[in-house]
Length: 144
Image (cartoon, rainbow, N blue to C red; front, side):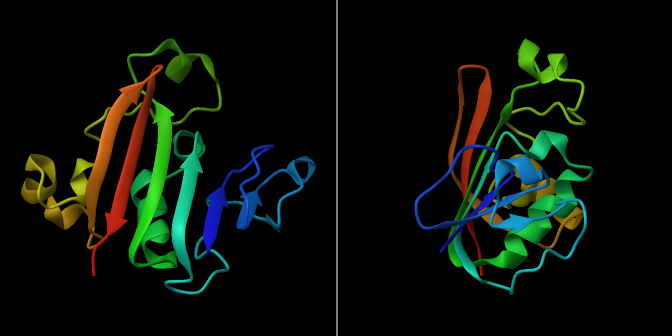
């Protein structure tokens, strides 16, 4: 089962779509800044967070909530503007300006994740990390 956060008009097949705007016609109308989200622990095999994390109040808390609702071995796919790209700074609703290393803190196999493991007990393995068209593209898998 797939969960799509801040789905807007992007609709994924066989997914639960979440958005704060009623006009997006989500399956679940939800402010993602309010936790816990109304989903069971381990309910989803995949979470998609395209162009949403930079709008939320707390990156670490959001990643921890994604970790909670993912099953062990489940994946999260994240896209967010790279801080060097103008799109990161143009949108007045962006609260965070991130780099390709901002999510390393959740993977203990990375330099930042091993040095600052205490930032969060939630751990992932980064499977894909690249910059494409000014966006950070990231896929991580939930560790046990």
